[in-house]
Length: 248
Ligand SMILES: [Ca+2]
Ligand SMILES: [Ca+2]
Ligand SMILES: [Ca+2]
Image: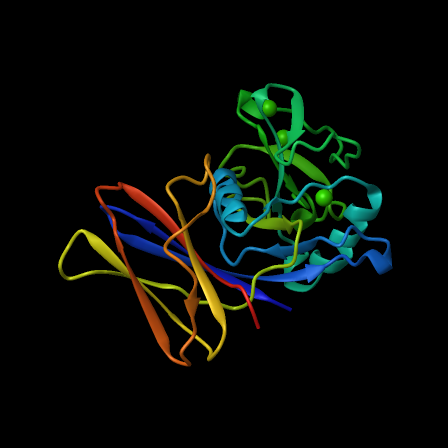
């Protein structure tokens, strides 16, 4: 079990989001793909959920086979989650009626609820699974919904929804990044607790929609206590940060 905490800084409004997602592997030894899956700890619209998934190194989940759907149902659609719709990475926002995975994988499997997708009111381009189960329907079936989720059609169906994230590689270890506006103004202090002899790397990006993570300075050797790095923002309107542990 690994938890990765990602910090997001928006300027000039200056608020910071930190999210923790607990991931579960679908092991190759169990017929899986070796990917890691987890559910977000808050409900959001579909686009915010996909942005968060990208910041964690993956995407909203793609369900590519009956076996993957079954793994998700038995791992996540149980207990208090059983009645919850969950966002997955399927949408027809580009071409109405043509559903595509955000990963670019082909659509090889579907489990639509009866009568779906129906594009209600011409405004349903984003897919949630398990939408119908909260009101007594079958487990796990898919529905196209507005980006904020549907207005309530019954118990548990009202948006926004929690999200199912799929990572192609193992999640990063527990690291909590604290982001503080420096008193001198146009810069931020980025601080995290370190372990002795462990090597860390801070990364940033200016958009979650395009570009990629860039190193913010060189690697940092842990000291056994909190370490801070300063980022002179140089007029950037918005930056996203993460810290990675490079060695044990
Ligand atoms: Ca998948
Ligand atoms: Ca649609
Ligand atoms: Ca629908």
